Image (tube, rainbow, N blue to C red):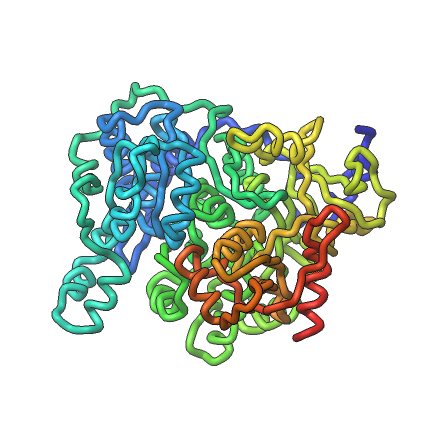
Length: 566
């Protein structure tokens, strides 16, 4: 490729004071990074869960014990270890314990249906899984043709303060309902209890750990082509992105910040901002098993947040609560939004209620995930996704021929290059070749314009992935489920925009001749086969679907038709 028109990095003048144009090359693997924080911040709180604290020293000890337990189970360097866990201290420990052995972590969404989970397990072939006890039977019942050998079952309530654990045992309906949300006893005898994994002492310090170029994570994503696939991320990729995040916010105080883990750790955004970035600077990470306004309000009274990574709907709800006076967010100095478009109205509402900054960033799982961000300072520009991170380059190209750059200021497909860019897709060389170009350039599938000073605005999406609630939904996956219904002859799934900046999953379906089915019945059918956020919010029966000359459904035209009906 010829030199990019943006090779001079015109955005550097917009960086906040103290932000470097480049970061140093990573020198620590993720376990080494955590060990450094344990050594430096040992007595400080690393994790807080419903008020129960875990110091960095205690976290380091638990990681070492879990690593020894996994070693005795047979986990070796290069093995794949699947995690199916909500946010909890055990999730953090399991993540770093597997990495300490040189194993590869695979994160899974715990609200996935058995069908969705099985698809991913078939793809990655992990022999070991650490699973929320509510899902232990689901995983234990996977067929014998999968490679899975050992399952560890985690009761996240064991990490609660004693008083809360006792309260869950009370013989009252409210306590029973709360207990059922958080835990259940597996029927299968196959899983090993997490607590037993920690009873073998600590891992020998002489045990070899991973190196920077080793694979650390397979993160499943719909990517730029629609089919869920595992993005391969090394220790170097993930460590670099944590370093870039640290460089982006020069006002952070190592060992003094309080991050709120309202984002799921199994999602690339929550994983980097909370599991790696927060741990790298000795922050206190307050964990929530799921986002809940009441839980956040209660936690804020004990441990006021100073750094909040979230998505626009969360910011909007929190800002409204702060404006009502029911929640004090004056402690939040930095807030970074991602995963979906951030409305300017939400920025205004947040900053009026908190007095702190709210800036938007941009990235994708394939970039670990953060690649661009608005400067933390007066040069920020609401309505854009900001400028490239340190050590990150961009170019804007012809979507039909990515070797041809578009003139400066003209819209085209955004390409990224930097130390956070992934290594490819797990066992999918053709998909990798389509997405990762010569010279390390990553095709984002997003159409963007760049201002003369380097601010990027996303104007359209070349890819057809739907983003709802911060999660990617593959239209093809939902269409496969819909067309498996005996009364549906054809289906097209598209995104319908909402005023909040989010998107709804919508489906146009063609019924078989002589059949009548209510849309709610179709949605109920989908609920048994798809995670809730993938289920179409709107189901519209149509006579036919627009198709190209070769018979391919024209989703863009379907979207336009459905929008005209709203």
